[in-house]
Amino acid sequence: MKTKAVRIYGKKDLRLEEFELPELKEDEILAHVISDSICMSSHKAALQGADHKRVPDDIHINPTIIGHEFAGIILEVGKKWQYKFKPGQKFSIQPAMNQMGTLNAPGYSFRFIGGDATHVIIPSIVMEADCLLPYEGEAFFPASLSEPMSCIIGAFHASYHTHPGTYKHDMGIRQGGNMALLASVGPMGLGAIDYILHQDRKPALLVVTDIDDNRLTRASNIFTPEHAEKKGVHLVYINTGKMKDPARYLRDLTGDKGFDDVFVFAPVKPVIELGDTILGFDGCLNFFAGPINPEFKAEFNFYNVHYAFTHIVGTSGGNTDDMKESLKLMGDGKINPAIMITHIGGLDSVVDTTLNLPQIPGGKKLIYTNISMPLVALHKLDELGKKDSFYAGLHEIVLKNDYIWSLEAEKYLLANAKPI
Image (cartoon, rainbow, N blue to C red):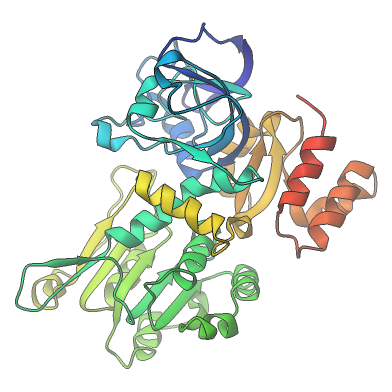
């Protein structure tokens, strides 16, 4: 079977190509990819090429398919896995197979599986790691976004606190504590707010900061302080870019106690150092955003590490349990990952979008891999609709849903967009 896919050949060398997939083996699964959400990690891999830890050294000869936040439909199942999977099943993928003792991952390391493709062959290692996850939802985009949501969930599980006088770590954020999310009204920050408000373990105070008023306004309209109060959380949005002493202001919100949990959503030195400054006793700083520069450093107050027991954790992706939790929360209607999506596009928009991702404003860029379509911001559909009835129809759907992507919008797109 032929597939169309975006493959990486080297640094900044991504190519959309059509090629033949090999014959399916007894321990493999053939799948049809429907959607893929473009991750900043794919941008980093595109810049680093073979220098990236998950990308093979020989991609100039054996290129790999990029994209790791994807969902689709199983088409054919090799004999080994027929007891567990069947044609017609929808699926999501957990790319981080760390429990198998490897950094190899779909979307980075394999020649015939990745999210930015029309058809893929899922190798046995994915099933052996229990990373091919059945999905029963009607829309495909939540399954794509279950991977980034799992990264958020994993970070919250990785944070920890201690009991004074003991060496026991209580995993997770502090129940009823003070929490700050710094530089956090991008797509992953929005997902974090959604998760905090709609799961069982919550802080009493949640402070969300950024330096962009427009992004803060959008976040506060999606997750209002009034809604948060009903969930038992006092939610405050703050533009720290307008403050002479943001650390003092933030600490004052806690009565100078400081924050139990601080999450840093941007790999920016002053943001990390702000997070360190506002930590309270036994405070945990979670460095969520991965830097591109392998020599990236920031200062940390080690006097407080010694005497105030402050500490830092970092997570890179979630695990399979985190992804299952993500899918369950979506299935139960407790979280809505659609709020992360601000742009949609077809497979032919992947190369430019991935290479230029930091320069494209907004949140998640969602790709439907079987269509030809430029990357389009949801709020720009009205302009395009003046010249094209396809965009006009799509705009009508997203407008009535406050520019939030939906099952109805996905169905319309898949039925009416130009095939690639």
